[in-house]
Amino acid sequence: MEMGAVPIASATAAISQARGEPKGAFFVRKKAKEHGTRSLVEGLPAGDSMNGKKLVIVEDVTTTGGSALKAAATLREEGATILRTVTVVDRQ
Image (cartoon, rainbow, N blue to C red):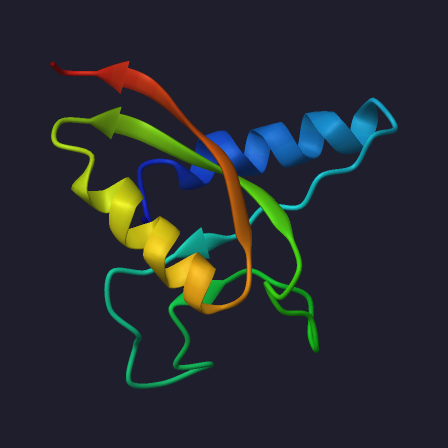
């Protein structure tokens, strides 16, 4: 979910590009905004979708896992396959 993991995912995408193995980054909102794309998934190139993509979910901090589970459900509804979830800090 947005915000905590956005810098982590963005840095990972930048490093992957510099290493010649580019990986994209995006984020999943808790709730769609009333303006702009009005989408739960933000950061995709124009015309791109989650359909058929294989993804890793990145979380900055996990307490219950609820945010990752909600993001995974949203992404699966958009047609993605979740390969794994990576958590930087696990509080429990």
